[in-house]
Image 1: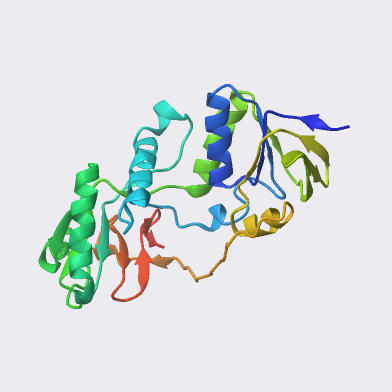
Image 2: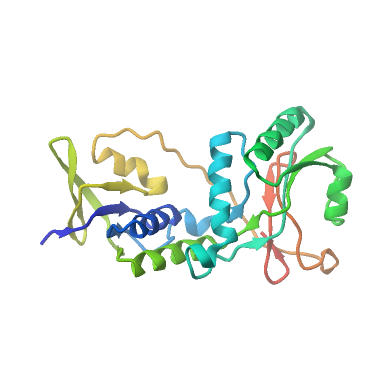
Length: 259
């Protein structure tokens, strides 16, 4: 028997869960097909940095719109996303100073709280940081980090309360088309029908695209992460940082840890 939905969303990471929430908020009843469990892929491995500093204006505008959700999560979505305000620093080497300044001007034009700060300013913000190897950074005082898995789960809980459906342990095996349009999605748990199918499969989006003869230029890359215990002298927290001088990023974590 084929189940029918207003829309089918393939993948229940934070993107798929957010799409389900926003469609349900608009009165649709979407079905989310997840091959494992909520946030099992890239979302569950994300470091959850919440910041608006991007080189492209479209990305910064999207991040700024998203930030309003994190800042007002209880009122907009409900539940918990784990947003923690720490402030955010983007540190760059001297050849990128002009680009950094241009980015900050663009961010301020959008309305993002952002400013250029010196190494001395950073030392005042975070006295435990080594600041001898850079001169300038961008600072966003309102930014920080959130819980990626919790964010996805809250989106999905709110979506299900509005009529969305989640099917877990559900591997998509084929997508059927008719007359140039999607007609059915076949899975390990049966067939699902909808006029709209959203590919939110993240790193597996190219695999899903090939099911309808789409060549999506999706690539993935991996990097290692670790938790370290901060010296007590550093205090209970510190800013979240992307450091292009040393090719690393880090943020505080609960329990005296840094990710």
